[in-house]
Length: 547
Ligand SMILES: [Zn+2]
Image 1 (cartoon, rainbow, N blue to C red):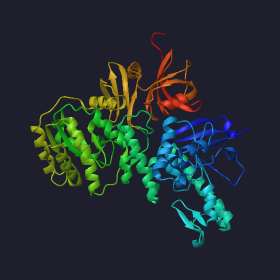
Image 2 (image 1 turned 60 degrees about the horizontal axis):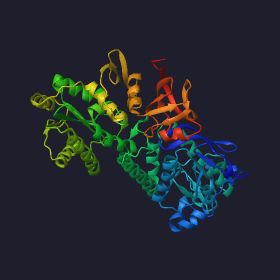
Image 3 (image 1 turned 90 degrees about the vertical axis):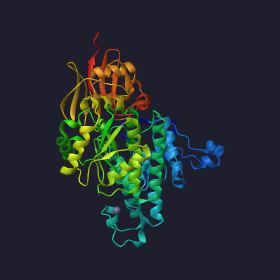
Image 4 (image 1 turned 60 degrees about the vertical axis):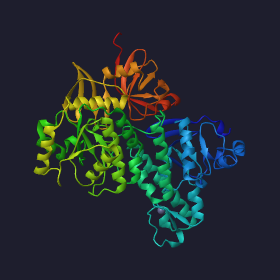
């Protein structure tokens, strides 16, 4: 029997955006990202590799259709190495658009440098064909790039093959081990939802990989702007977002944050105070923010606040939402032109959305430059209250003076935090009475809990009351078979799911007898399509009231 007649089984273990750890079953099972070793007999040899590479689809589309690889249940991509970065990204994302489940095998493409970004884009299976051919051509793989074997006097590696000497067979073994190490590291990072930070670092090793990441980000940005529901990214995650490279600014969750916060921002006063960010998150727990708030006391009540950072611009109401709640950015005091422009544009759109009449900026240095630029974009004026240090007594007394004069609204900050978080996450209003110690807040309606802040993921965790509303609106809902789910709901039990659902989202699951809240482990369309794997982690459930 040919392998392309086999039914290939895919069972998801863990997602990190488009990347995943999954168990793929042919005759044997393999955990992805997986590197096939072609120095040994293996069942992947039975796959159809086609007669023409996928790169030919542009040059000779008809010929390509006739001669391309045909395999059921797996996408085999050939000739990626010869394709421009844009085509590689487009090809992989077009496959992912159709199916989040179908595994992708990139033939003769992997090096230790590009394996992480290919896995990040959604490739599951790799091989050591380049590791072998490059060894025969005299090249030695390192995590950084290739070295000429002839130029190495002391191999920078402790593996068994390197200790035996650098003859060609040992270099094949070494190069293969390097690829396998990379695949294992990627697996660990997917578990920690941290692959993106690593990919940004790896891409610095070559302009071609940087181009690939930028194109992938541009494409996701277009999807996010168009509100394309199946865009393969995560809104909430538990890892810290690092902003160490310029590509960090275009992380999909950052793109989404800017778009979504501008959409939902609805401040309740005509006065806004602009403040600098703090190293500690959430900002409200930092020493700087506490000192400023203590210094102005009740004067801050009824005044909206926006926190400026590089690259985030965060209305106070959204500071518990990811990535605002969990990011780290290098602070030198110096702001590049690029940073100033990036932040200014986003600050301008938030200020316009807020329709503020009075803007007070309690900022200094690079922050002031970004504010000035934003004001000129928005055509607005502002009062600067800090001279030098924002915490000096002169600066703080000027701030008090301006806040005294300012027009104020009437709102409770914690209520606004819940209202904004719910608008951001579910597109609906929520009200109630907040309780708890910041940031571990809960929202109550009379004696019933509506939701709580999940500070680990930077989102709201709905309780039954909110879950029922979501179900009525058919948002983030997952219909499951009639059974009593325990810890995890597996994909075969899912009958319907909102295609907006991203891994990491809270969802409402239901059947004819019960309703519950859980965390999605897959994309919504993936839950419906997949025949195996973890779909939803159950958080709480109950029988329907009428029963
Ligand atoms: Zn070695």
